Image (cartoon, rainbow, N blue to C red; front, side, top):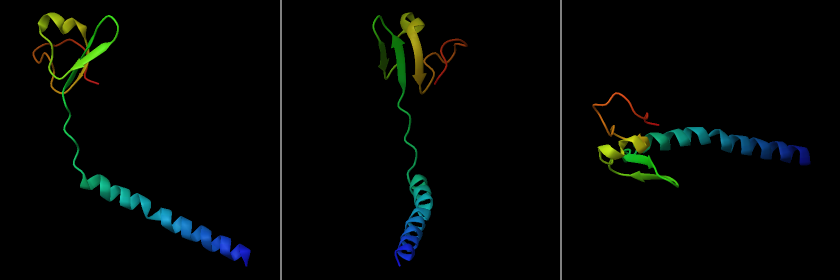
Length: 82
């Protein structure tokens, strides 16, 4: 009797987990992706500071990375977007 109960319990557990991936797929499709907020990160003496707007041209050599539009769209060199 105990063996049958354990087998029945295992079947319920497996059946409950079988529905999980389909539910996750439905939730992922329902939410649209968030827009990327621009970030421009520059190295300083002690750490990296990030800003929502790119700094002026004289500070451009300290740029270490960015997300969003290129800080210098006409330049062919510089750090790559992560």
